[in-house]
Image (cartoon, rainbow, N blue to C red):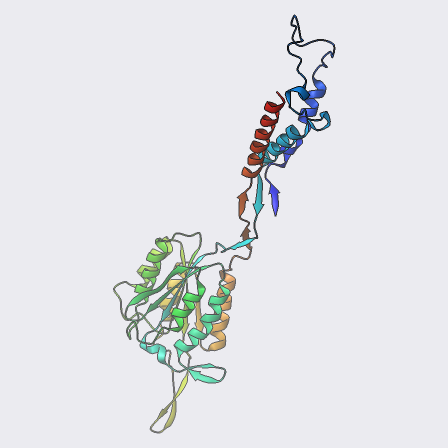
Length: 327
């Protein structure tokens, strides 16, 4: 649509009439220039071959020039359709354990038994979809920690790399400290008002060169909150020579360490024993770390003031030609 940035400029439209009204009227009988004999100067327009413009329209061109100048002064712009801007939410890094223990099949999705990593992919896909407005990143860790996706608004890319992750790709052990340190390093290079790390694991720190608690202290100094999730069922039946027996598949989960990491950074520790609990945990994280809800848009503006300026120039040129012909 068409808009004027300075519409008050049009208030100057009657200014020429006001000036003319305020100026003293000239005596029609008083000559502006006195000469001895005016006969020499009196040459009729008809004899000179120069048509004279009717007095009723002599004001038309100056009025159009004045109007064009005022329109240019009003700064007309063409306002385009609204364009939605990505919301400026928070930096949220997801650290997912893909060590060998994540192959434990103690989880169920719709009644079907699956391993832990399959469940994590299933739940995180929905979580990623809900994080509109955040910059998301993905770290996969086992014996080593790797940045799979740097912080980005492209949630589809994060989802793709998560779904393509494979068990044991980063090694069979668990380097929790290295994963935290890597997340802190990447967030330090991308400062933001709110930075959060959600770390999910099913074991204890058994690899890496950085102690988890030390890495958490560094993250806390940088203002990074860490929410930790311990995944794994409390009991599981496995076949044996004498039938089946109950075991605790989460006996290696270090809940104390995960709790300390979370509390030292202002985050929370969560325990997920099944699909429903893991889904509720990520929903609770949505509440603890709400996304930006206010939609931000802008409308692109294209200046049009050069068009009335061009019109004023052309009309002035036309007015000059008519004055030269009538002169």
